[in-house]
Length: 107
Image (cartoon, rainbow, N blue to C red; front, side, top):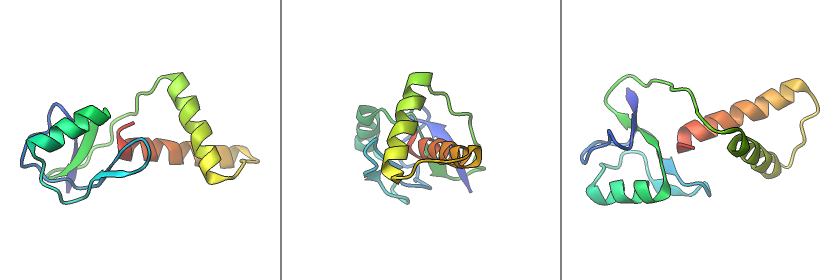
């Protein structure tokens, strides 16, 4: 079981249920790492808003991003995929991938 917590709620000793990635998709901390004060500083420096820790029901929180950030993220995702969607269904797949990536990285 896992639960999503904000960085403000995160305390030393809590264990990550999923890895944390920075905006360049590099792993900052792996799954299973016990949080320390140093980790809290690193996460704050990288602007990570929330993480998923072990020890509770995982709750999905709505993703709140401004429109400009959403457009930049979707543009970047489309470039990384090297694929141009050709239908509304394909556009929806890209959108869902973007939302999923943001939820896992805190963006």
